[in-house]
Image (tube, rainbow, N blue to C red; front, side, top):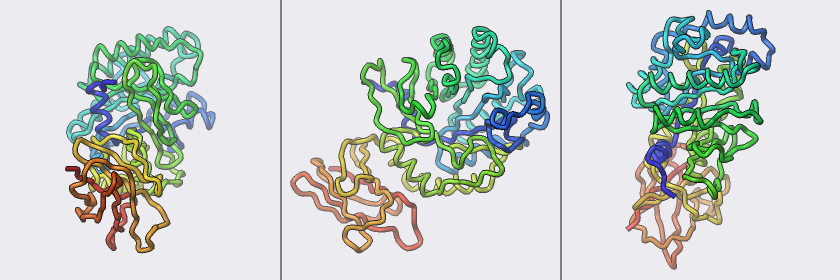
Length: 402
C-alpha cells in the first residue's frame, strides 16, 4: 500500500505539541469549564473581554516547541465554546479580532514559520455558542465549512486540520464529504484528522481521513483491510489532567513517563502529540516549559531514531518492552526502563533474530560502542548502563548493518 508523500512527511515528524488555548484559559479551570461548572452563557462569554494574549506569545510557544524537539504544533483555532482565534470575517463577532483587535492565528502561523515548525489547526465540530448547532444543523454545517475555508485560504500552506466532536452527535449527518472536499481543494497536501475519541481509539473513519487517533491511550497496530489507502496514526496526550490551562491542576506526569510514551508511539509508527495549555496571556507555566526542555534533551540525543525509522516485527523475548525500528541501512534498539538486569552488573543482554550482518553497535546519546555477537541468525548485544551523571530513561542503540 503506497504512502502518500504528505502522510509520509507527517509520520517522519514523529513528535508534535498540542495547544489548547482560548477564553477558557483566562478562567484557568480547564477547557470544558463552561459545561462542567455550568457557567451561564453571559458570564462565560464575558471572559472574552479579558482575553488578549501578550505580544510575542506565539513566538514563545514556537520556541518552547522547538526546544522540545517537536516538528509541528496543533493549535485550537476554535474550541467547543465557539470562540475563534482567527478572523471569521463577518461570520461571527465571537472571535479574537472583535475583542483584542488581533488575528491570533496569523500570529501563530508567522511564529511557526520563523522557528521552522509546521502549523496544524484544531477546529471543533461542536459549538456551544452558535444556536444553529441545536436548531438548524444544516445551516450550522454551512457556517462551519465557511470558517474552515478561511483557515485553508488565509494562512498559507498548513500541515493539516484536526477535527473533534462528531461523538457529540453520533447519529447526525455531518456532511463530511463536503467538508473534506473543501480542504482538498484549497490545501491538497494537508493532513485531515478527525478524533474518534477515547471510546474508539484507532478506529478507521471516513475514507478521506489520513490518520487515526489514540486520545489519552496507548497506540497499537491498526488493521487496514478494506481501507482504500494507507492511514497514519497519532496519540494525543495531556501533561496533567486537563487540556486547557487549569491553575489548580498539579497532577503532572513525570518526564520519564512522557519519554517512554514517545518511544512507545514510535514503536507502532504513531506520532506523539503532547499537550500544553497556555495561561490567559498566552504564556506557559514554568513547569510546562521545564518539561518541554527536558524532553528536548532526550529527543536531541536520539533524533535520528524517532523520525524516519519504521516499526519491525522482531520481538525480544527476554525483554518484550524493548523493541527495534529499522531504516534503510540501520536498526535502532530501544531499551526501555526495567528494574531487573539479567547479568547482575547493570548490563542488559538483548537477543533477537537478525539475518543481516552487523557492522557496529553504538549508543546514540554518547557514541559509546557496545559489545555484540552474531551467530546462527541470532544477534546478542550487551546494553551498557548510562554513565554516572546521566539518566535519559530510554536508551537507543544504533545497529549499523553491512
